[in-house]
Length: 68
Ligand code: SF4
Image (tube, rainbow, N blue to C red; front, side, top):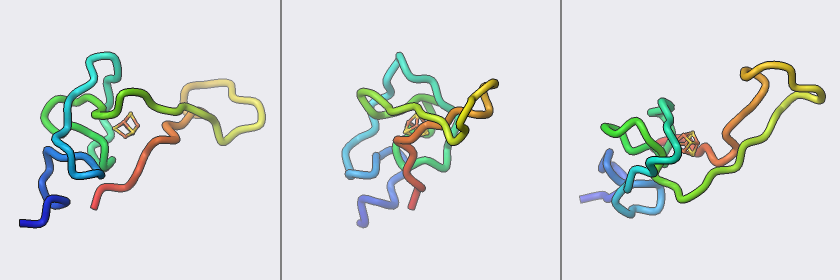
């Protein structure tokens, strides 16, 4: 079985342990714990693609990695 096709595993192939401090709805991310609506990382990096961010749409989770 290819571990990277298991929806409950993270990008590294480890079981996805939902982080109760990081709620997330981005199910296309390789770190998303699919049924829990939470991130499986211990911490994430948030940044911006704007020079002067003024609203939530200006910010990004820079830990995102596309799901396989
Ligand atoms: S890395 Fe970012 S986008 Fe991906 S599941 Fe975690 S919080 Fe969501």
